[in-house]
Length: 86
Image 1 (cartoon, rainbow, N blue to C red):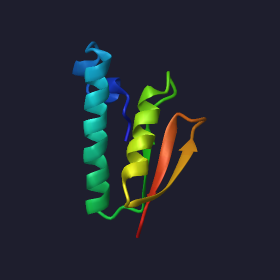
Image 2 (image 1 turned 60 degrees about the vertical axis):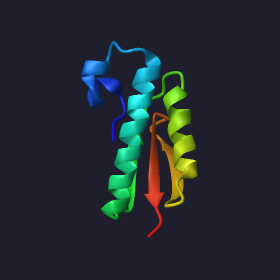
Image 3 (image 1 turned 180 degrees about the horizontal axis):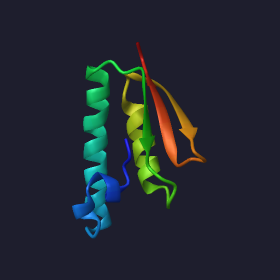
């Protein structure tokens, strides 16, 4: 899942940062629920490098999800690969 706002919701590109972050988090939560429901073994979350605000939020949310057993930083910290419990 690519969380760059230009890809995810171009209509929000000029919104205030707090609104963009909230939308990205909502879509991430939806995506994780879909992955779990569809019993996917893993997923890739592209959050970008930037200032790291989105990356930190996403990784915190990952750490709170008991159905995710592993997270791995990939693409020079621009993405996170997650593995679900089987």
